[in-house]
Length: 248
Image 1 (cartoon, rainbow, N blue to C red):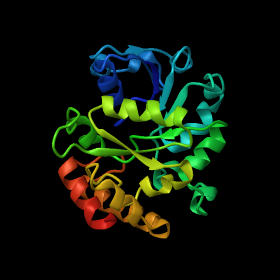
Image 2: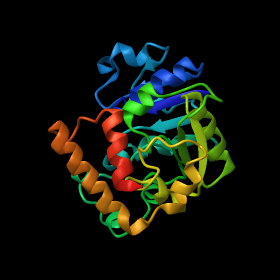
Image 3: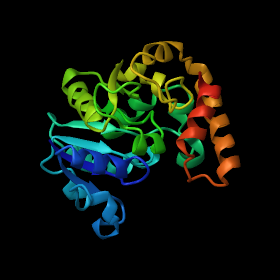
Image 4: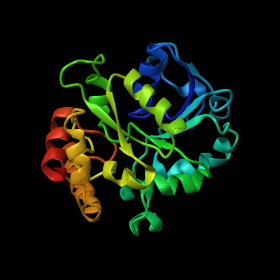
């Protein structure tokens, strides 16, 4: 596929590497310009371009930027063809994104995103930690392969999103519609807990929407106390253990 990736942070850089290595034609952009994208992001064949160039002539656009910046790139997304899939990897963290009243009042994050962008999206790669994503991918059929939940409202969006998740080294698990995607938001049992395909259904079913924000904020506070800042992600061992205790 021809893929444009906006964002080369914790998740975006691994997406660029894995999808390029899988044989896809990948264009990568960030907010600072193509000259600032580090060589290792492009080591598997990705091409550094401007944000405007990244969304032209592609079959899939992957948004790997903070949730609060999605409204800013909405004008770029308007020009993406209707038959191309837009995949969102973002999560709502108030300490980083600022308070978003609609989400705080209970709106599902993915539905807020569709409203900002003016089109449907698929939700994927949001529920795995960056260290697990970078280091724990396995070939299809491997024992204990980690599963990644995917939410979408249509087969047109769901099928390519799930295929691309598989290409990054993880089992794609269809988690339901965007209205149900709160089950993979921060604080939910499947969020960054490195579950297998067999474990995923029970985790999704066990999610309780009212408990997610408090659990999310407890995890943030514990991680910040450990690493000392709000931008460093924990290693997979600590992050997964913490999230399993708090979320499951």
